[in-house]
Image (cartoon, rainbow, N blue to C red; front, side, top):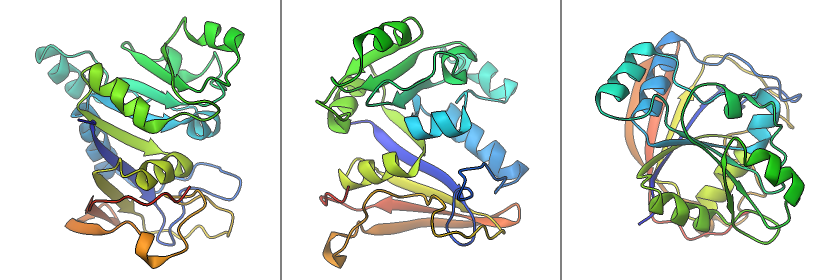
Amino acid sequence: MYPYVIVNVAMSADGKLSTCERRQVRISGKDDFLRVDKLKSDCDAVMVGIGTVLADDPSLTLKSQDLIDERRKSGLQDHPVRIVIDSLGRTPLTASVLHKGSGKRIIAVSNAADDNIIAGLSEYAKIIRVGKTRVDLRLVMDNLEKLGIRRCMVEGGGTLIASLVALGLVNEFRCYIGAIIIGGSEAPTPVDGNGMTEEITFPKLELISVEKLDDGVLVSWRLKENKCLCT
């Protein structure tokens, strides 16, 4: 059985993750920040795509020492396993995800990734080769399940999320909607990719909850069975 996948994003009131220049924008506040850290702590792994690594250089670590202490008491590593989906092995050797915080890292690449580059990355992370020219996400999930990862949080970006949704690999979609407007037709959205052109292929959602948080709203959905291929 594949890991239980929770997509967690923060977007503006007009559905944007950042500006057209892919510049980070503070969308949520302190309460949502704490919620995200707790969600991350409750997961076995946190996953992002290479675009997020290149644009934001996230460490994907827990920020709360209390949460780290709780994990230690439970016999867990300080931080969830950090996973990068990186078909061509473009993760910089200086990336924060490879160096900040203790614990395991995984980089999933395709067979098109250069062997010399992968050799360098393998000093910092476990390398999973799956797919000819593009990472096969189903095989990634197979590998994660075998590694004991049961619950995985996905933080972005839009291309990775679109692919996971298209393959029916997402169980929950949690979205904080902030009280700002960013605008821009080229600004990234939570689910990018090629999109769906027929209503029959639209993934269907079941509302779990709506909660006022900070100056915005947290909306949580459960994805119903989805077999479309939209990317």
